[in-house]
Image 1 (cartoon, rainbow, N blue to C red):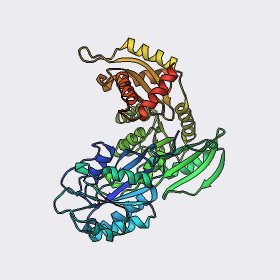
Image 2: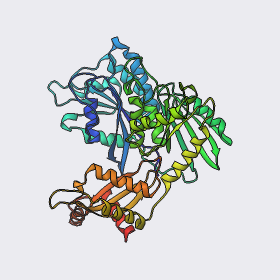
Image 3: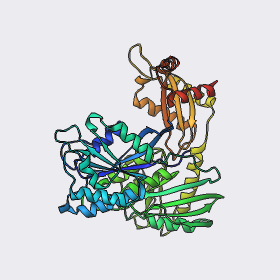
Image 4: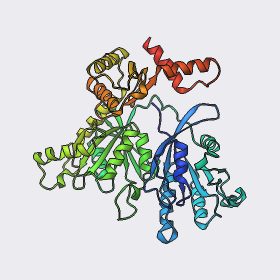
Length: 474
């Protein structure tokens, strides 16, 4: 189990190419790219792979923030919030400017506040492929020493930027073995009762171990002991609305929450019983699942529900589950911090989920499950190109990770992957935690092995994992 991934935040004015740069670094198309300013409507995150100076592969979490608003639209207030969020939660900051435009007062303000954060800052002058791009000397007056010239659209300067990220971001280290602390984060929109539940949970424990000053701004922490286990609660009170219009992910500062999610083992996603099933709740659930963290859906303020009774709860539960059908494995619970209803049960659920995330399964048992699944429902494919699933191994825990080996695996439909996940979940109780499934084509592995033997290709991480899995199987 590794510690949280380092966080790198991309900030800058609108239409300087932040989203294009994000897409290029993550090799994805997660952010919307267009010519118009202000296209990015929310904070997008993705993982970036790179190599340290010693050649060791590593990853970081890249945050593409929304374009900063112009001065006449509360620019300074918005940049203040975004820079402070980046300073509080990011390990490094990338300031992006347009290489075809002379630095403005807004650019200088961005640079000044980024440097004041005392975090490593990299200045990226983007769009150098366009006619009229300025000399690098024009941007030195911003005061940022490290300057990289890029063209995100044409992949120019990207490798140099990755090298700088690797040089300025700390490596992911293994956690200390002697500290077996379960970290539980309270996630949710403003005014859903996170702080109240946080205080109630802190009062329900068997003994308070310590009050820990938050190392990240607006993240309150308390360490308690329950059922002979140390639990650290993280209250992410920092998710706040920046305006009263268009309730959505774009109106929140999510950097602190992303950092807390990455740090935690289990997340409690709180939802106000009087304002259920908002798009932001679904967005946060997706982020938690993608991060591989345990998840409990918590309906708060049940004492304030209008006409609450068992019938109402039974009617609400399937509706809420339908809104979160992409996380069917997440348990749903109704709570009240005022009456204490089901509050202690949250501890029990968190402990159960944590234990399930640590469990390992023998290769023999897994392969029995796989063969039963194939016999019951063989995978479909194209003519003369049917996928063949030969064996499965568990390669990691927290979250549980399984690798399936075979041939013609590229023809496996996404629905069949879901079917295999359901079969694994039915055989082994993984309630409350996502599980990861990877597929390795044996023909491709053999081809890579031959290329490596001939010195035509480097030894990759996937190849090493395949060799280790093969040893386990034998």
